[in-house]
Length: 99
Image (cartoon, rainbow, N blue to C red; front, side, top):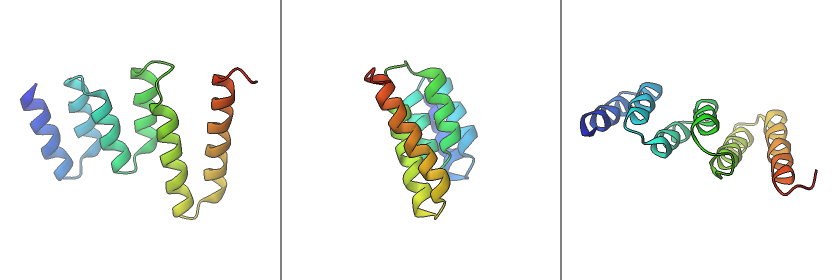
């Protein structure tokens, strides 16, 4: 386990973020893998891992969507950012059984 984590850190240093996240997943470090991907703006991959590895009530997917929306806004991609904000809002309403 320690070797996998050390190798993941080395891969991250060399810019191989997806591979590093894979090795973290081998060590059962799901949250660390997700955070690594989010830190390097690989939101789609982080969201896929969050939806498949974490429970339905976990707050991680909405957090990733918020981060992604902020990044899209900062880079000027307002249309896609708006879609993600609406998606996040609807998921919160659905969670609260408003819809």
